Image (cartoon, rainbow, N blue to C red; front, side, top):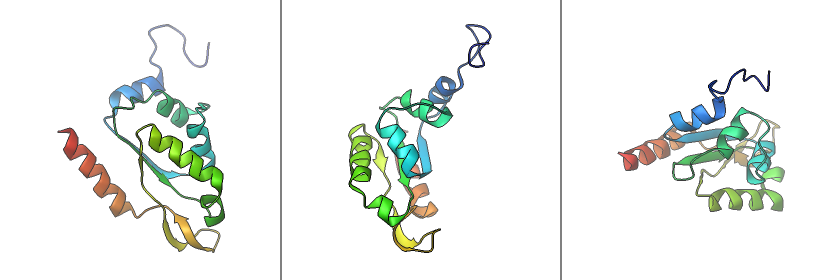
Length: 125
């Protein structure tokens, strides 16, 4: 078998997901996956699906990482690249993080993300 496909007509999951979804939300988006997406890497189901994504469909990304990682210049470059692709950046918020530091880097509140998703879906109908 070649990567799980046994025949030409077998579905390719990341392509099927891309066709099926009207909108994508990546929450939380860690620094590693953000770097992969910003640089076009596709080595797992998520990154392959994003790489195949129709950039005319909404994609919301919600970063979550330590404050020092969030404030690193490379992170700013990655966010800018994703925004330039037309993706919607849902900014992280300030709170106590998993590492016990307090600062910007926590994923936006779920209610805020849901509101943005609803707004995007309403625009599509």
